[in-house]
Image (cartoon, rainbow, N blue to C red; front, side, top):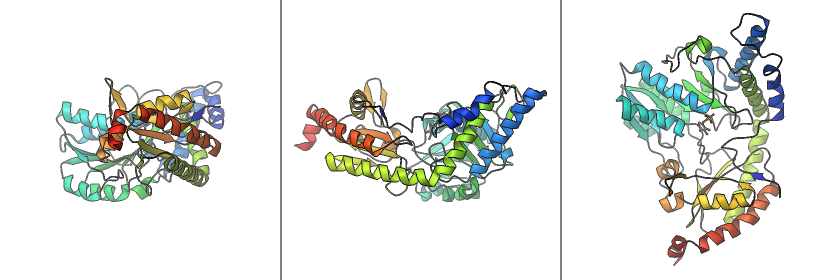
Length: 390
Ligand SMILES: *Cc1c(COP(=O)(O)O)cnc(C)c1O
């Protein structure tokens, strides 16, 4: 059996068409976009074309788009850059409870090491933020609110616009991490009403190590790096021209395929969820059936650890991921599932299957044959499962 890759939320293979678009800028047109000679000018033209293409996708001005090394860097610049910019007048931040570590950790750093106040917005059982919880916490002292558009573990999609609207009533800035949404659903900065938005290429068939941050015109941020005039001093460093070209091309392709991929992913995911639920008892779906990125499927198998399921699947050449982070030998449920009030016993049993363009019904059928005996075997050795079932 071929390998079945169901971990597209971790990363994706780079589309050969994207590689092809990038190649000239790694070889013949290798110039530094800051150089004044022909090599530099060629690189600069490619970089600015890429900027225009990416801007067109999220419907911002090219001048509002800054290339970065990916989602983590964009999130860090957004959180730290805004917090530092306004720290003399405002020192309160608010983030969602299910944010990616790239938002969570800079925010926690500001709180624990730099004297900022941090509030975390709770989510409901589907991972959705209730707008009232923001109204309850936001004050005139709030400088930035950050809530992700789509969650990487569950695929839950937030209603961003109402949250951004509340935020703006308090003269605060709104950031969204759109890494898992871009190229999968429509992402429009005006409709979302956000001031900052992070994206990356490698989750949507682009290269690793390149992303972008949208910063609305007029929004001030303190730079985190110094050393050059690149990206208007907000992100100095020789531009990754080939990467920017790759990001632009991959987004163009994703936009063109958006509707088709969305319906195909929905169909495959429903087929898979129904298949698993029909064949295996005591399985729970994590997330929102209604507000979600269809390709992300998080399922909890009662009584066994997600990590064990993932390792057993790997032996059968199936790549998935467990929702839990293994810390010092003890598997802790992820902060995402805990925030959703998923009982720890189920949180530990979570497995994330993330489908992608290469996923076929035949592959899912293979998983549907291999998974039930794996779960049954692990449960037969699980004292926890036996105790629940008695
Ligand atoms: C992957 C991911 C990131 C980090 O992006 P990188 O480009 O890998 O640094 C940030 N946020 C979310 C939601 C992600 O899924």
